[in-house]
Image (tube, rainbow, N blue to C red; front, top):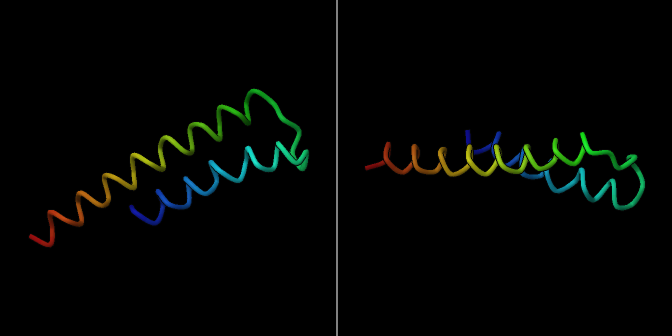
Length: 57
């Protein structure tokens, strides 16, 4: 879960960067997709860390 969250966070950073460099055409859909990837990645990462820390106790 932590790894998937990390990958989604990286995608959420790389998509706007690619749009800024005009590698990808900036569209509203890509903007929302990158925002959603960041949000879900952060949530999954935090949930994965909490789950991992509770399993270790």
